[in-house]
Amino acid sequence: MQFRTIIKILGQLVALFSLTMVPPALVSLIYKDGGGVPFVLAFIFSVLIGLMAYYPNRKERGELKAREGFLIVVLFWLVLGSFASVPLIFLDEPNLSFADAVFEAFSGLTTTGATVLTGIEYLPKSVLFYRQQLQWLGGMGIIVLAVAVLPMLGVGGMQLYRAETPGPVKDSKMTPRIADTAKHLWYIYVALTAACTLAYKVAGMGWFDAICHAFATIAIGGFSTYDASIGHFDSPMINFICVVFLLIAAINFSLHYAAVASRSVRAYLRDPEFKVFLFIQLALVVICFAVLSSNQVYSDGDETLDHALFQAVSISTTAGFATDSFSAWPLFLPILLIFSSFIGGCAGSTGGGMKVVRVFLLYLQGIRELNRLVHPRAIYSIKLGRKALPDKVVEAVWGFFSAYALVFVIIMIALLGTGLDNITAFSATAACLNNLGPGLGDVAAHYGDITDTAKWILTLAMVFGRLEIFTLLVLFTPTFWRG
Image (cartoon, rainbow, N blue to C red):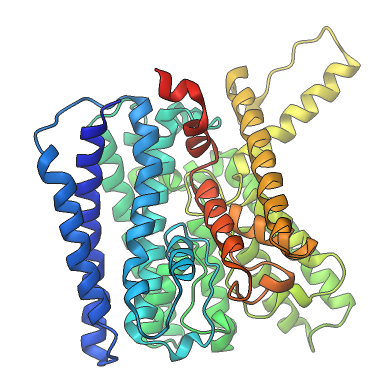
């Protein structure tokens, strides 16, 4: 294991990450909110630590293999999440404990959107901007991770995209092609953010709110600059814009790249995961609308459709924005929406959850096993679109699902051990492991009232969810350290 090369890379990353403290400091200067000093101090601290890690190891030139790749990816999120909490620790307003600052920073960077804060609209503008910026940067990191890095490491069946995705994603080696892929994805990500910002502005938001909410929307993060989230604006137009951009951001960014490169929408129409994703979204909206209408929760059909569409898309794509408290909805809807977050967005998107393609492959595998019971000697292949998948991909997806379930159970039991009730523990685990944000019970509005121990456990859950389980889990195997 080339530890010195890894330390050098992490030093560069931390020094680069320190630049993210500059925009909030400038926002503080513009709005004169008195919150800029902690960001300046955090910038100096991060630069110094980054250079101290980089400089002694600057001449290391080792070629990185898959093992080092796993370690770098995990350390990337852990280290940057830790440094992201530094300005929050320095802040006078809000005055956060160490556990709260780390929870908020990791929630932002992993685009979970769970918060310990209340009275958000009264916070300094610099703090509000920093929270949204964290989600935006985390969202970009997720896309590069999901499309460029994880397929090479063979994590949980996503290696099928190494062959499937168009354009610069095909290469499987750690080469400049990753940088090329990341560059193309970056252009698309920035363009979508700009378009979302303009749409929000035209719909009636101020520039500050439009930029902040566009950051969180494209990253499928869920942080807002108001306690009431998107519901603060009370605008069906803003709700609809949010839904449209959440759906776009929850689609595989490789498809966006293919559509831009070929100037055609055929890439979307040919993709089986895209079709399944849209079907799931439509089904959820119809169910929510039908139940809300039959229980007469809202005054008329338009209002019912507005809330049903918004909450169904927001929760199932793991954004966690809200126009109303879905936890108070009738019958089975709160639990249905929490379960929908397990599916999440498409692979290679900023959404959380297990990803649509994996759940679809599990469904196809289940159908195959039923067919085998009827015709034991027949040979059935699993096809994604027109392409038959090798069994090792299906096995990897089953392995991923097993690991996901195991991690879920362990985290939920650990939360029950901290004194949380069943519904709160279950929904908090689902909300953080799926990078959703809001839960049910004591965490329906915010996470400020749970114990510090529970916050640390849930911070780990966020990282597990964001790193697709295997990437982090592999570090706990003796084989990894023996090689």
